[in-house]
Image (cartoon, rainbow, N blue to C red; front, side, top):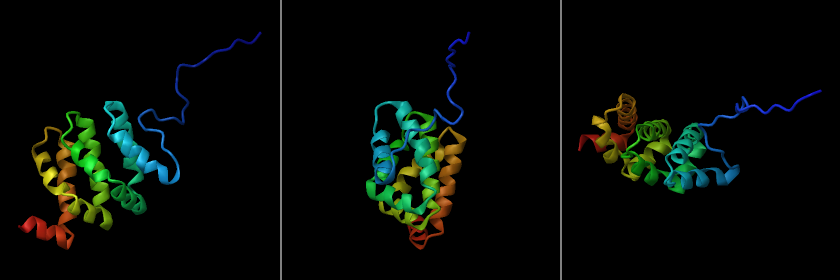
Length: 147
């Protein structure tokens, strides 16, 4: 006779560190809402999902339009090191795209990043330096750093 056995393990194709993402035009606004959540886990999951999405320049443009940069600027000073790490990683990926570099300059992210130069977490400092390097390649970025 067969017995029912329910596994306590998650299915192999489900990653518990990523937030479920809505489809189409609703994906980025939903992640933006989750970044503002008071729950740490919700913020971390949203950052993990966003990190995958910003590799596409179209998503970078939409993220800037939705208002992600204001939320990311706030998260740069978060008490949790994972949140700061993923935030700087997202900003670095965004800085790889021209539209992302323009958005970082226009939203004042550079001055907020300067506070992370002394961060106790190595990867946060590394990502910050990489962002500054990418920004310096843009004519507006060179003007910003020379003043």
